[in-house]
Length: 165
Image: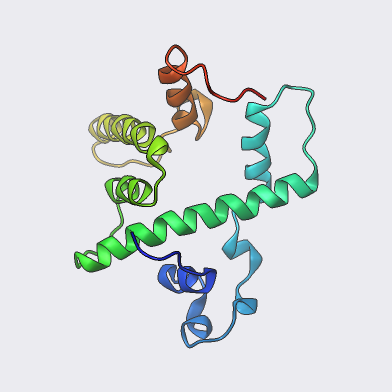
């Protein structure tokens, strides 16, 4: 496991900071929209787990936006380090699973592997049906939340310790 990199280091790894950050300038040159997930998307994901009449404050959405963006950067940075050591340029889903495990997020590895398997099956089916021209997202009826749906379905009978909101 590598040391926890700082945000500036992660941004350099991903190339999101542009040439000025790579030359050593501070994070203030990075546009917020390039650093964070869209807050509307974060809010939609948060609402899915809450009761229909629940409200989410702007502060809660912004806090979660920062957290999930940092989490993605942290995991991707670890996967990217692995690829760099193996002299590969492309981070794939298996690298992300490896990074999750290496960083101690073991509870996420198996649901992610199930998602990857389903994604790959769906992509293969779509490639065959369209002659290799895949333009649709693999979303299913639940949007990008197949991961959550699969995880909930798998754990419904086996995990009663899950926190309920």
